[in-house]
Length: 331
Image (cartoon, rainbow, N blue to C red; front, side, top):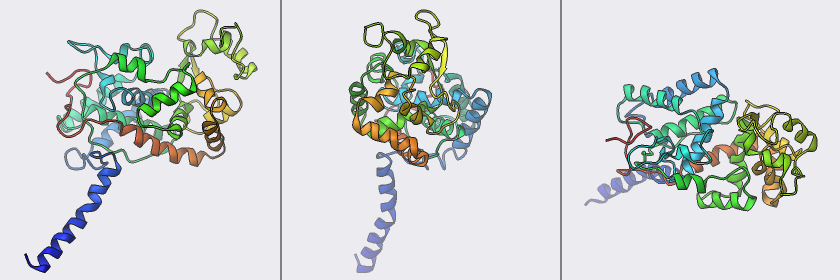
């Protein structure tokens, strides 16, 4: 081999190096340009269907964003949450965190149907979920980010994983942090991603204990502003009204901003899992304060933490499949 030929070979290796590093940066196999050739309009189609759904019902943005969390915390980001029960599959939709509260499945059906027409058997349901979460955030006034793509869909679901891995509203701070660490996420990701509660609703049943009997002594949670307690009791009685909805951020309930953190500072975090970010851990308390005073800082970190969330154990290469219908595995 001549010196010149070997020089060209080295040069060509360097030319490809950025591609390798780019894919590494996005968790090994995922990269934003994944569908550029196989389905160039994929992102545009997802965005238009999500925009239509959110215009019809603002709450849908929070519902779609929540599905991404509840998917990625169980078996990784593999769209297992979208599977209905059938054959050997017991749906994660039946789990405690999802039953009567996970929603937005019809929107994802509509996206999938449009994509199957545009480029059959190409775009995974797992990628649709990640894109819909980003678009929901942006449509609500939040930050944007490039979504690394190339996930594939699982052929299984895990009801027990859904019951055990997803943080619950009444979990202690330490339990929540342990559940995040199990997914490779840290305290910064925990506080930042909790900020998604700047949009959306919670049911009375998810915080009733704080209003009436937080510690088993018949008293409300002392870390909850008492005038706020009185206000909440009006529509969340001691019994009944389980499904009555309350804004997670009563200041700007449909706008993605840092009001959520300001509410926590005022002891008006709706869920116990919101308020403990300020009362139970020094590192998380400092982050709550920083985000409450600096919306830009919150937005920048939220984008980074969402990419990290989307990188949890994706199925890539030949693992899993591209489902034709997000609700069932291919036969």
